[in-house]
Length: 117
Image (tube, rainbow, N blue to C red):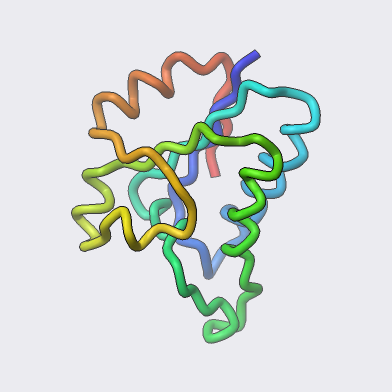
């Protein structure tokens, strides 16, 4: 079964991003068909140089680097969301495929289950 994890929120100020990452890593033990999607403010989850401690949060973004250790390579980022926030591929902490919104949506609709964080 293919599972899509959608990240839509900023990394700090709430726990959903960290909880989503934890869910991805836990689910990877049971399924090899995982895809991660970052859109809207969710693109901030993958930006280098975050300092969660500055806002009294726990810094967890470096844990996204563990995705490759779990053979999670299908990571898609909305190119339009990146551009709207003045970000480029070089700003990302990990390798990801930048996709236009239509292609990202088409890939997301191919997933049998979708979890949003």
